[in-house]
Length: 66
Image 1 (cartoon, rainbow, N blue to C red):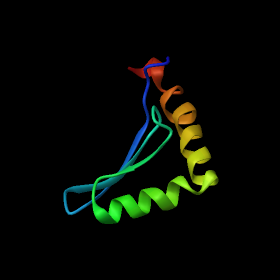
Image 2 (cartoon, rainbow, N blue to C red):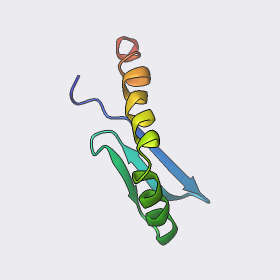
Image 3 (cartoon, one colour):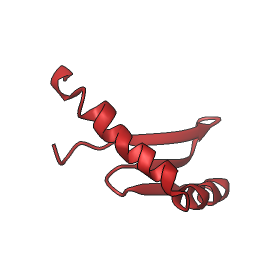
Image 4 (spheres, rainbow, N blue to C red):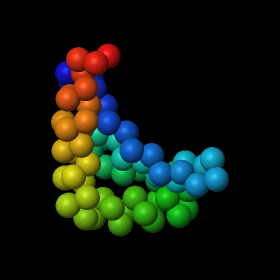
């Protein structure tokens, strides 16, 4: 169960701007705008906590389906 990873990507016009990775526990930006958005979201503990909880609620709940 340790190797399950939850990824939440934010894209615009087929370009990935930033993403949350549960293995890192934070957002990573890939464009200038994405880096700013990642910094903003990384400094907001409620956003980070809710996405970490999504790993348990979504991924671990569906592990038997795959």
